[in-house]
Image (tube, rainbow, N blue to C red; front, top):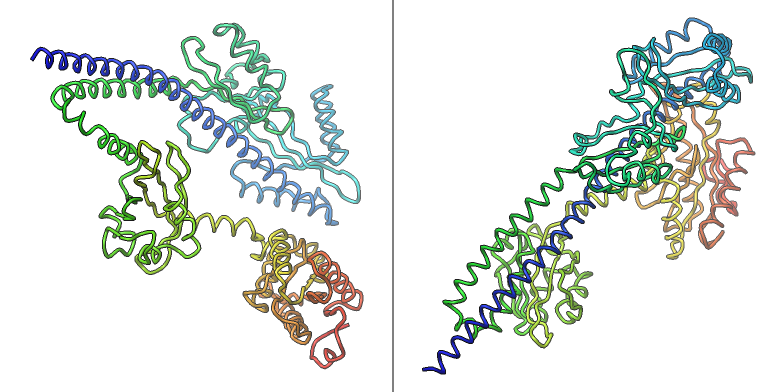
Length: 630
């Protein structure tokens, strides 16, 4: 009896020591968790603040590029027109343009008027520099200036010179409110806690924003570094701004300043040395972190108490089943990392694959248990043939030991008989000897994401104007086919006198014409033929899987006929083209060789009267075809 009491007392002491050790370990884990949590939140804040700042940057650059493009297009009309810029139709045209633009108006001022206005405001280095740059035919984005005429607000302007008969005769200008430089239409929760300002590299504030629009008079110049000097310990804010000035795309945590957690983000706007600076008060993030930690501590303390109570009652049973429970707890811990979707497990010892009941909503399963799985055909039927080797490697050789789940994407048979993309996230449970016992996994249907990825890939390879492949995608595709030994013909197509269409009818009509040419090319050639826009009004087509010169000539002739039928707005344009054709592999074993010969053939057709095609090395049998050939 005394021996039993000693044994029980020893067991109780050991259990209490275990509880104490567990408590200490838990506290240390909380400390590590808090540091990790702070790091994660800091990273999220920095990434979101930088994304918000860059969105402001992109929006402003897009506005300036839009305005510049509009002004350049109007200036190009005057440059190619003999009409006087002082005529009445100019003002009517500019008013019409301004009515269609919500953010800005377009104004015209002659260079003589500009010189007079400069004399009225007095000597000003900035105005002289603007005038000289305009006379040098440069586009100008002005500094931010204060104007009482504009309601006592700050503004900046975008100016493009107007050239006629080789001389700069005036300037097209659009004036914008300075507040646009620090505004963003992107909705972001950070916006409510961030202060945006515009500074130069030396820290001088550029007065844009509500705080720089006083009711009485123009505010004195300010410097952000000087104004923030002395805030917090060791001047953290002013030092950070000075250090980050002139850098683009950086975010930094300044730490506690006057009791507030402050982050700063700086990005170069790309004009006049302007930088967008965002200062973020992230106190709410610290509050979230503290709440999460408090909840974790409360739950953990409750868990420790429950373990202690249950441990006293079930101590003997736990000792006998220690090994079994350790394996089960490992499995439950891994399952806890997965969301409650389709779960499956594979037993390495029995070669059995089991699914949760909701798997029948994703896969055509007759039973939720498959045995044998790795050596049987039922599991193979569910897996796409190309993905079976990868899945078998997981089942047969789980040699990667890691405490983190592994991920892989596989194609599985869906309920409609078609393969669907699934994300497989799994982890192997091992015994004391390191041998694999069980594989626990989660299946997720990722077909929609795969479709979106494919759509994005197609958008990145398609020419926006014609709908054909862009230059890079066309060259890469043709080069790949040539390297694979595919025979065929390479067509180089150049639209005759395309520049006249742009000059007479405008670039918008020119783009509509190119779009129609793309439609004609798709209609004439097969879907299996690669067609792309090589640049400007030049197109390239690879007619594959044929060595027939007459077939190539027939395609070229049909293309010339269909091009002549193109019309814009019901008006026939009588479009013609010059086409050069080279054979693959007869005229070259790679894309560059064949492209060069086809390009030479195209220029042969153009030099011999246009509206025709020329085939490198074609025989006399082509002469009998009812199409033009040099």
